[in-house]
Length: 113
Image 1: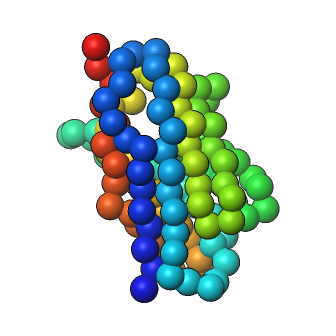
Image 2 (image 1 turned 135 degrees about the vertical axis):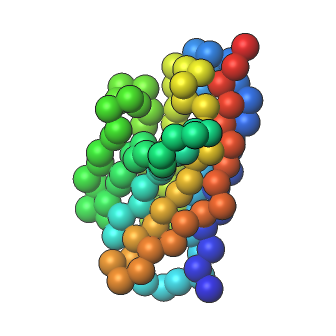
């Protein structure tokens, strides 16, 4: 059974930083693409960052220049700098094996003074 576990969320002041981690376990298949999504109350889930097994990286427009995604095998990280109140959301991890994908349970990020 594949499990994705996110960690690292919390409360931070505007301008601060957080580092999220997503760890996948339970499969010997290759994860082709790992992604971070977020969903704020009353809004649709949006793509934050994507990283493929080949190292291709994409970011959502609202986080370019502030967030950095990285990956070490089946673990993905999201370094979030210069956080803004509008970054407040539940952050979810997605792992795509090509024939199936899985979601984590989410981790809350709150940016507030």
